[in-house]
Amino acid sequence: MADASPPPTLFSPARFGELALANRVVMAPLTRNRAVAGLVPSPLAAAYYAQRAGAGLIVTEATQVSRGAQGYLDTPGIYSPEQVAGWRAVTDAVHASGGRIVVQLWHVGRISHASLLPDGVQPVAPSAIRANAKTFTADGFVDVSPPRALALDEIPGVVEEFRSAARNAIQAGFDGVEIHGANGYLIDQFLRDGANRRDDAYGGSIENRTRFLVEVVQAVADEIGNGRVGVRLSPVTPAGDLGDSDPQPLFERAVERLDALGIAYIHMIEGATGGDRGNVAFDYDALRRRFKGAWIVNNGYDRTMALAAIDTGRADAVAFGVPFIANPDLPERLRQEAALNRADPDTFYGGGAEGYTDYPTLEDASAPA
Image 1 (cartoon, helix red, strand yellow):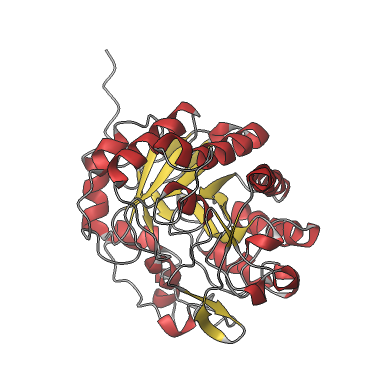
Image 2: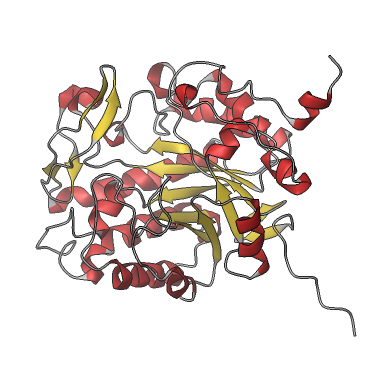
């Protein structure tokens, strides 16, 4: 009898649906605010992402599905031919470097400002509840604008925006898409009762509040195949001034419904995004047990935590955010237990090559002067 396969490690290959990963170190989506005219990815973006092609999977910065989905200055879209062409340069560069890349599809909902939207219209949301939050505009950080509630007959149109964006993603050469259902943006706003006070088929009960998520994911899966679709969730993060009165049963049911759609993976943010991992008691393992696809964990993981998550089977991959900004060769640094470059927060948002494509790799550091 042949020996059983060795258990996976952080550096083992994996297959998530139709996505083949060379390792289980995932680059998390990172907003960089560097899109150029027409909200097209910057020409530097191809170099930036290609430098990080050693990740098992790259998830791009959040990318708006329509003109009305934007919430921050200079974030890219994927709804125009020019944007699709700009992203094609990125995917070609990543694939030439041996990487795999998916685009994160995004609608910000109420986390926006009228100055960023066509003709200065109001942002949309499940309910007309203004978030106590700020966004980044040409005038710097400002309070978000008051939203208006989406009419019932408008919701199918938003679902179609996600479908169209997924179609564009495949045309742009992406290996798949990740649907942004986290961090207080539109899908998350429908899920959580802190923002959803509707009394129709999209509000009230857990089944109703998970309806929009399911419809979006189903539309995208129908368009490009469920094996190319992932979803990001953040059950307890307070980002976007958002909360829920009872998140455990809500997200257990959301995950059950996603499992029924047969998607490739769920990307789970544990705790407050970019902050405290234990700010609210929550049973993530209960969610994991409800999902047969791949499970990616995220938020504050270091090498030791990541190795343990894979070794114990608690996760199938681990996503890293800020460490990937400063360490284009992060998987190799983790493999070698090498020191990490320190990221410069002053260059996170906006600008050019500085703090974007100029961080050194281990190979750079060892090269003769």
